[in-house]
Image 1: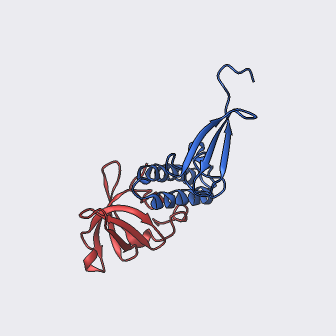
Image 2: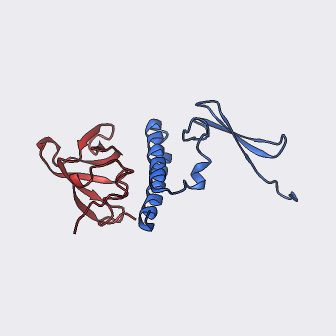
Image 3: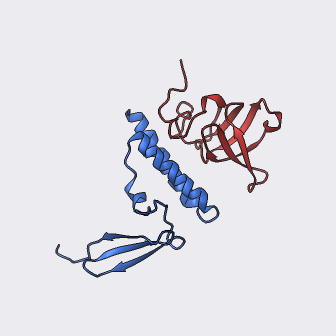
Length: 105
Length: 95
């Protein structure tokens, strides 16, 4: 894959995800379609999906999560400090660990 | 950045478009914003009625896109035919 194709693919993914974020309140089904189009572009161009959007996707049902609409976010301290994101579409949980301020590890 | 050269490979969703020529006379001079795209069709929200969706075949129309840099490009529709992810790679314009 040429550099030019990969550059255009990254721009297209960012355009589509920004449009999905703007449109999700009025047309949520279109927002999911934009995410799927962006995902197909990343597969075809062999470009990694941007990190800032990757955490907004449910691991189980592969839907784009909008906090307050189809996802809830909580902080949890059991076992290790982590963020728990619950997908309200499929009921699946995703956990991301974080470091507390002032912790040595 | 979408330019006049790379519009064949770039994203069309979100661009303002006007139909300049078509074999279907009812589609000529229609304006709107591109909502969605498939292999053969463009879905446009009418500028007069934003809630209305128009489905336009790509192959029979000539389009004028307004780029984010406020320039305008005229494009033949048959050069845009193809799935959005496949349009990334294929060579569209022959010198």
